[in-house]
Amino acid sequence: MATSAEKIRAWTGPAILSYGFRPFFLGGAAWAAIAMSLWLAALTGAIEIPTRLDPVSWHAHEFLYGYLGAIIAGFLLTAIPNWTGRMPIAGWQLGGLWALWLLGRIAVATSAAWPALAVSAIDLAFPLFFAGIIVREIISGRNWRNLSVVALFGILLAGNAIFHWEASRGDFAAQGIGIRIGLATAVMLIALIGGRIVPSFTRNWLAKRGSDSLPAPPMGGIDRAALLVLLAALAIWVLRPEAKAAGIGLVLAGLCHAVRLARWSGFRTGSEPLVWVLHAGYAFIPVGALVVGLSVLMPDIIGAAPAQHAWMAGGIGLMTLAVMTRATLGHTGQALTAGTATTAIYVLLIIAVFARLLVVGLPQFSGALHTASGLAWLAAFSGFVIFYGRLLILPRR
Image (tube, rainbow, N blue to C red; front, side, top):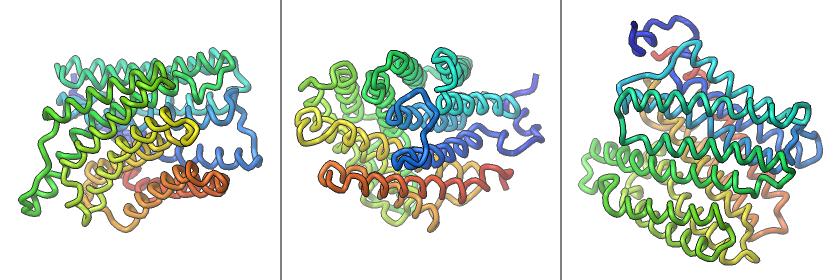
């Protein structure tokens, strides 16, 4: 039987199906732009999205479980060969998995026309199949140290299922436990994986330039302590989002991860956007923890929804975009440096995040800030599709 690597080399079909990151990064970025376009049109009353969900819940679901689900799939299908020496799928099997993800997006967006149970089954089919794939690969490769990633993906799947259950009961799912489970899991994934790649990539870049000041090695005692504090705080927040213990825990977690980030020498990477954007993306993990924690402790001053956007648009949005651009460049044979277009994409997304967060302090301009944030987000992900789509579709040079 041919090995997975041999199957990839023997694949003569479309290049986009030759490696997992290709269809999922391109599809995820395109969906981030399309979904934002639909959301902005719905906000102005120009259209009505034919979904069973209320507009806010659809918007939250499609970012957290739609967009992020695709990017996690693309990342893991790219990372697993490095972890295990194996490659899960390529070719039409990969295309089938991607089509399953796309069916979920269509089903949720048009769910007003379908039974709720059918929509849930279609949307959950992709993460179920994908979970089976990553479990198979990690166990077959005896890569036990990354079972924590499998566990977190399983929790993400459970959060999506709970979200559908809450929505089927008529609850406001955008502020339910299902969305908190998904958001908390995504934050932990970034803290766990980002805690490995950010200092490692930074160390490699600085070492090539002969720097005497290198980041602290990843996953030391401070890192493990910061992760445990964040895990405990997030667990309390998921179960009891209004408890003062959740607020205090998140503020403490934010401070711990700010210290963690400061040890990675990000201030020395200003000349290379491909590196500093990793630090900027990770910075929204402690910033988000602080803002969400303060929203729990001072709910009359900071609303829960704007606070959570520090994590969702900032931490998840910017970190995933940073990983997508870097992985695409590296795996398609390009130089690992960010040009003008890539830097503009990063800046646009940072503008989108800060415009959304400014709503907290300038509620009288909330309409204009929401629009500005949405347009900057749309421009950033459209830019990724335009400038990176060619690399994802064409064969590696």
